[in-house]
Image (cartoon, rainbow over all chains, first blue to last red; front, side, top):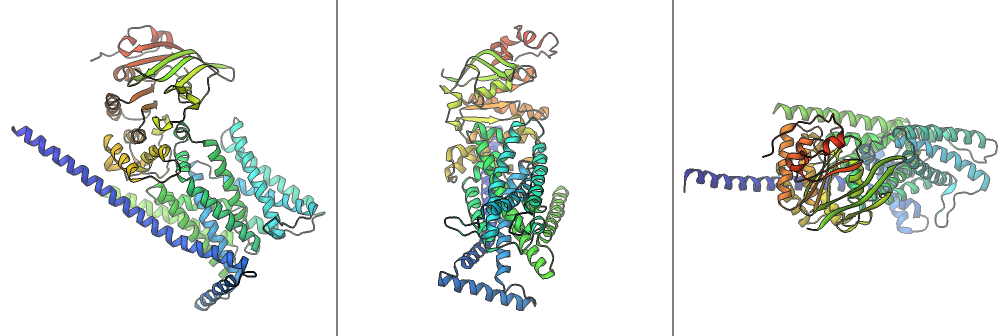
Length: 378
Length: 247
């Protein structure tokens, strides 16, 4: 065997060793990442389940005895927290309801927002919030003319619930209209968004002014515009809970398809995915989430919950799965901290949540810049 | 040889503009075909027709023997779009996540299995990017990104690899390596359809050339292509190409 042959043979062994080492390193790194994701999902998942259980307990406490007991336990925990913080906030059911609604919005809005911002549709939430505002106005008119109190076959939505139900329908129709305009107009992508945004607000203001003459119910329009804990009614919170479970279920089942379409729409079409249907589903789900989020955040700030946590997560995450997990964690953290701050300081919840979310976003930029700098130094 | 793509007397009109006129060409199994033509010549339209994304106004397009718009075994096609070198996107995707997409058509809504991850690992190895599989794709060079997209096609176990001007914005040395990789994959039996505007690339690497400008001007082997009048006919007299010696 010549010297060259020996070197080649050694080189071959070294190359194989390197490949095996690379593969092992990748598998280990994948396992670490998946482990960290699981911890994040587990922690905030438990919190979300606790909040859904509270809403269920609040809903059924009149008819199911164990639910009444469970509801009381939440209030007892609230008393402990109040004792520890020196506040008189957490011992009330309405506080827990607002926290539950906020945490659920903190879960679903960033989850959808992660797909929206990477499809360059960050402003769609703002637009659909304005459509939902027109929906609330339409709800006022519908309730005034039909006298419908919001009762469905299975669920009593209550008067405010009736408004929200009409807002939900109008918002979903607005989302479909927006999709249709985007596909059939020859303008840039953001032109139909701007037109629907302005048009919805215009129709909303006209309907509100017109309905003042005959509408028997008074609507807290300022609450819907700027967000308020007072308008998170039993019915509103239930609506958020049902919609959240539905949206999370759809996203989890179709996660791979949404990722493929968001990343490479043309290749997704070639792979046979029904891209238009998936895009429509995404926009309609956004409309639905916006109606829920509008109650706490208000029309003007609702887009923030879709965009800011997802943008912060995109700064730090390495993978897309990690981005979704981080976005949800940041969203729920913002909702929790923002709501508690607004309750303790008696300030509007929408503004508080968004300020916390932006704080996290700025921190994420700072941290990601530092890590990029340290990478380039090494 | 079996016909992978069969285009027969295809006409296609956008609004009132004739995009393709009576185009017929076949791609056989194991062929490496380069589709060339000036800007606005209908290359991408023909590509979209072949992939079943558009329906011809007249004529027929068949993919693996089936009408292209009804073709369901989509995992048999690996597609690399022009957008794949686009560095504007900042979506945080690892190379591995991109390659995973190649398995989606196989798995549908079900979770990926251990055998899928093995195929993904092999695809990454084959294009030589296993060591950067945990990195974000938007932070890679154009050449590395292209390899990731080829790995995605390999992970889907595609029989036909379709590339639409894949090296726009990629530096010359990475481009040569990339075309070397394509040639090796073709030797391994993968049929390749490459849409290119660079005549030099087409005549150096592919075995068959189709030259179009709304209608088909040439369809034959790449060596005879430069000796024919197809370039002048399709591009006009001022096409200004650099001729080079074939090996």
